[in-house]
Length: 286
Image 1 (cartoon, rainbow, N blue to C red):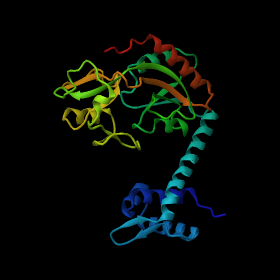
Image 2 (image 1 turned 135 degrees about the horizontal axis):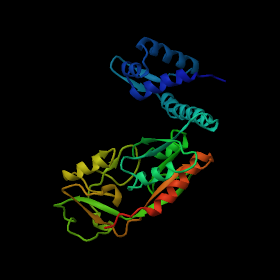
Image 3 (image 1 turned 90 degrees about the vertical axis):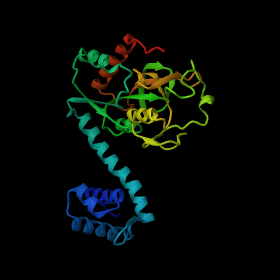
Image 4 (image 1 turned 90 degrees about the horizontal axis):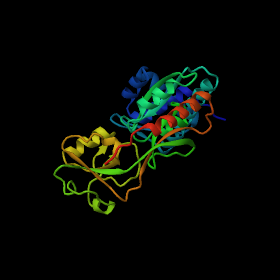
């Protein structure tokens, strides 16, 4: 069996991501010659070249691409194992909640206030993530609970409770052809430019890539695209934009999710607080 040390794998992943020895060395906080030596040692141990090098270019070989994919999974799995072990042993006094900026439908303050009254309530650390990885935060232990949107987020392997259900709206500039409509159907959006979400494969978007709702709204304001979102994500509606209900779009559900294998009391306590707080929230209305 060929052994590869965790540190060596971290060196390889950094270079595979950067494809530049200088940038990878800075990222790792090591000298460039030390990184070059480590990569040669890995290649020698595996018996295959991982990179094609030239004076101007660094490129992954097929073997390098395979190690990049599976090596990243291995590092993530190791990190997750450590985090889960520490939390199972009770070494963490904080509960970590992940959500996207503005992705709470106005419920977060109520939930936190309700949780503060729970016996044994601990500090809640709020983590923000991009559009694609909140579920991964829960699966690998970086977060304990998360606010996700169904059916958009992948809930596989996660337990969840629905906190809020709302309609979806199309956001357009005030001068757009749909701006004066009382409502639209999905077919009315045919031919329009929709965003591509950073880190989210597939989708119907053909427009510029955006990383969050703020970027998307800015691009809509300058007429580069339109967007379809849960209504609460654009409440209040920014100046110069109009929201029109999409009558045949599936409703959006804000859910509180957690790892299905996580049965710790601090998670159960937070779930109970969130479900108690949600019915008291006054839903956003058209």
